[in-house]
Length: 510
Image (cartoon, rainbow, N blue to C red; front, side, top):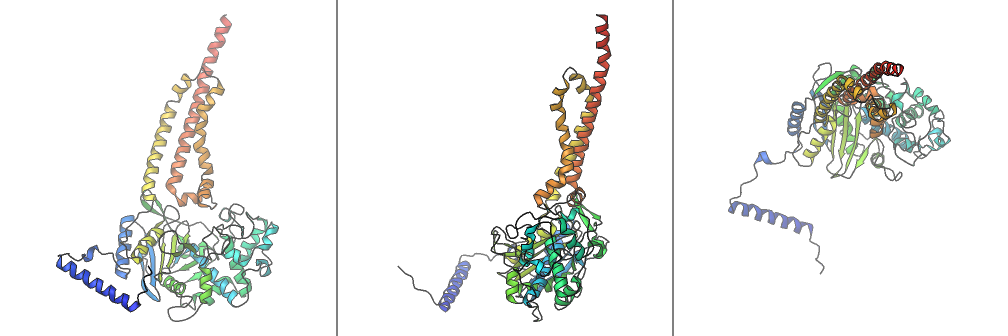
């Protein structure tokens, strides 16, 4: 049987009638209304402020800036805690946003495309002849491939963070001449900062002015992002990007090594300016004061992953998450001393940006704070979730102490072990000794293993920034194993040296 459609006015009337019946029934049955304290807090300035204060207090987060928007409205823009130099963080404190910069670079390229100066599906070399690689397939890399990170360039063939860092975009592009591609252009997504170095150099050449000037004149200034700029390297960031790393339940101020950052992760901004950026992204390219910075179609393109490669959710400086709850458009950013996250919730027109002055991996505070704010936006209660390292570091600390204790015990008992095994052939001792070589080997390959898990290549020093407790634990195990191994080898040599003269004398007497 087909049920006829109900007119919208009739539906609203039925809904109001049902609600009235519910209220009447609750009153007659003596049901108490839900206390205000038990209701999920709304996404407003007071709720955001309470959550951030709770987060800072419970996790020991040194400092953060937060911007939350809804449509054209700034819901909240503020700073919390302090910088590494001890200054209070406010909504106007300048902070590095790391890879949130990529969406801004992508928008600059798309502006050139709107003006007809660039075609997304044309080869990059048409606009940038200096872009050459040691791979003939590179001639097929298009502008779209750069922005969607599907050019075929990858850390596996060109680990940019382990190489000498350039000073200009021209140098950065020239340094790629000896690089090869990991895959054919367009075949696979691979997150790789040099894609955006090349994109920024393209803006510089086609736009006819230095990249930083283009960004200031065509994006930041029109959006009244007056305290935002794009810098070439971390040494040009406030305090030279000095921030904190998490270790054993506390945070330690540290300097950031010099990294080249233009185009990929070089924007420095404030919570107030991030709010202006979020509004443009949620409002189809129009600022809060009605100024159009890009067409609605351009914004849609930057938020939509390409048809190929099919397994990618990466658009242009944004990733799309549809696997968990409502659709999210987001991107993370990480330096060794700061981490950030920008999130758009298209269903509600909400924008969220968070930057904290704790580093990557062990200091995933931006992601944790963002999740709490997303929960508020969805009418849920925001819970403080500690970064995983605040628990994992104590496990690693226990393993570190255990390794040192076992190493000490093994070294002290090396003589006893040597006497017990003195009658065995050398080749039979190898299986008992070789396992002690594994921890030192693990230490030498730790950066490669972490890079494999993160799909990013780095050095052991960079891993020490990212997760100090992991490196300390691995180094302690390597040291303990090396000491035991050395002590046993010395003890074996001594024991056998002592027994050899005795055997010679016995043979002589015979």
